[in-house]
Length: 583
Image 1 (cartoon, helix red, strand yellow):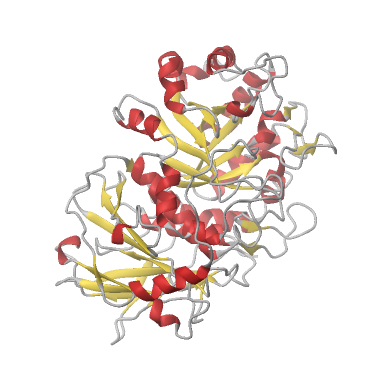
Image 2 (cartoon, helix red, strand yellow):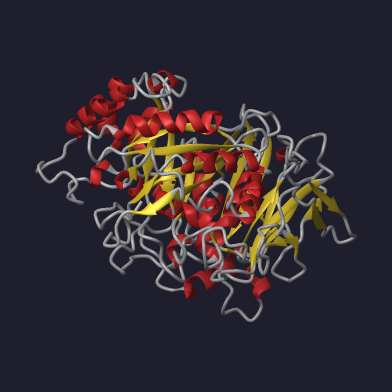
């Protein structure tokens, strides 16, 4: 997604500098803060551990997946397997699309490579390619190699009369089979007028859009894979910026397409950097109230869809990241934004009604990317670099783990009035079982900046958790894992559960004994317990008493966590190595 300046932004005002954040951090660390954890969840939106997926811009798929099925880099398999190993019985979510998917051309005769540049004069934020059947073969092999993945595939709506759309859809269905989750028809149609993609239409209205959506969708009834509308796996409208979703839904979209829609899709970024100018710095992203405000975008439509979850399509965020048009260097590529903010935003979306969200990544050199492949030919076996957003995918999957095999309900605990108080530097969530009757995890954030403090420990936030929040059978052995780094602006020295990928080029986590890699803890919470979260970091308290990552498939590419207690209740977390490909 690469939206123009028409993109809607949250109206929250960021701190002027980190100085204020520092003073607030000292305030919150004075005494343990008693946390109220409701015995049951008030919400009813059930999500799975695979809630946070990966969105890939079509034009640059080959940089990550290679040119054909024989050149898929082992490291991308390792990266994706590590996420898949944390989603239990649920497949990894992958989406292939973006502006380039809307404007690219499918060439059935193109055997290899799977992508070819279509023009050298393309807009940097919309680079169309020619692609062929090899794309589906590569995607299918990746899905199999990581132990299970499902793809959302973009279908173009730029030309409603394009006969190629049913050809693409049929070919994808025939090759991907059970690895196909669905199709997203159109990409940001609310920007078609601004981007001059309907030059003969002065005002591209939602009524015109609905008619065009119907025209293209009807053609999917006759493809090489049969009538795809019978699968009921279509998604739309994938608006990002201008249209009000509730008006569109109630203006005929839901009524017309309810029988074929699986997803109602949105795409949204908090700001854009499309013209080398941006509005918000890091302080905006570390205010939890701004995360809450961001998820209130399209809230009337969210309420509408949540009013009847059994009958309505699922709501998904099919593409997001910290800033559209590639992010903002020194902001998007930091622990504060790429890691902590991403987890916070993902959990907030889960809390308000989304069923899934996809974190976008583009070509090499883009600041918000999950990881960076080596220079040279696609599939080059050199070392990769792990970027801050990748850690968010790992931590979110574990924070949303489920023991009942169905899913979880996420509730914002509004710690210290953090949902509305922009001065708060702490926040938290409770993650319940699918019935909302038992707490599985508690997620605690400390956003305080300590870069100018002589004693960083002064900004540690201590949370006092009640005994009632913990499983009656396992209160004496409560695991705690930390998402930590050497500072808010850190790019590489980041750890989850005492393990990191810094300096490791093959995507396989290793133990790290650096002071910033906070080791796991195991606590006795029989009478309640206190969890101290250094600044800046996030802690996941496994209130259900276990941090088991479920086996899946035959490859065993998963991790198991164990906790070894020392007298100080500080433990080293030993996570079993992933049975995946090493360089």
